[in-house]
Length: 273
Length: 200
Ligand SMILES: [Zn+2]
Image 1 (spheres, rainbow over the protein chains, first blue to last red):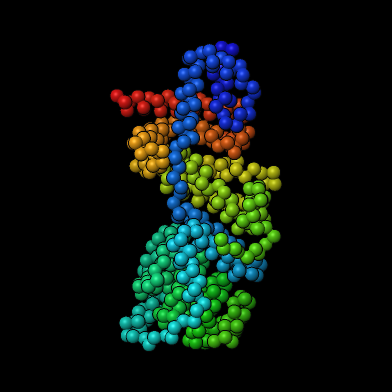
Image 2: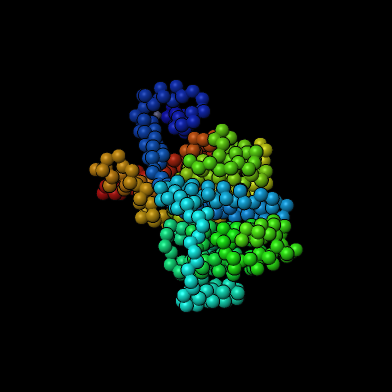
């Protein structure tokens, strides 16, 4: 075997799959040829360096974005009337999966925090101070006039996943400002993505004891078109024992144009209130 | 770990299912199965794309787009398909879109962007040299012709047999092997030359 023949087989020799034919002849040549030894060694060193090139893990945003995208697609599939059977269990499990996926201690703590507060009876509603009333009136105006409504900060993020991250970023604030809460209500009322709206509603659960939050959810309910989100909002208001929601739930229970599951949820909610 | 209610016949977290079985489940409407495929594959795919594009943000964007297209085109996944080959096929097309849009040669690698890749040197004393070597290798990679870089990087994925690489690249197995080896020789020449330049 000469040098050219030997070097033609280096590719097979360097391939870790080792699927090529027997290399005994190449190795015999290598043992006796310094030029080929040099050629082989430099190639092997380069490959070793290439294989050893460290790859930092992708940022956590990649996983979050992926599961947000998956949710979006599942909601789109579930939004088709025929598929609207058991949306909530599937939705919940998947939401928890991507919230929990990074399994970081902090994330778990937030989840535990949410789980602990979500279904706890909200504290008695405090009386409305003038500032809250003003904010509420302003919010209603914003919710009622979609046209000029791009004022809220989450909408300025371009992609769905970025807006979703904006919502998720609020989850670790135990004591969010009124601005944050009003942004979340803005997202609930106005975001074009059902997934973002549902996440905003999830983020609002721990603050259901605040009048501002309950009124915001109630004000957003008539605008909502997606049955999944409608049912989730009804559940929210019923869990928060918001008696102010009764008239709206009554209207929804009687509204024949609404999805059957939504009317049922409104009916059930009325009975519980 | 938290357990989730199984709502369908296929448990997407079932580790015994093959990639192919999971992707067939996705195709048939069990979208959660894509989560398991993501968990299995996004790391290596990301590593490939970082080396291929030289940019971590671009690599993340492309990984996201690849999985997005898997959902969008799930109906086209075939019974006799091969998931890994399909994934790299999609990744290749997404990367081509990326290069066309950015309209910039990947030689625009920003070493600072990749610098923190190089923090795994076994000994602190070697760190500077190792880190420099990594930067040089990234530079050498970025100087390869894009097709050469692609075939070389693909050839280092042991879970991807050459027959599948050839399928991804739409050429024969022999041609894929020859191209990969030629690319390796070019990389070696550039890499060693850069090392020489650093010494002088
Ligand atoms: Zn020789």
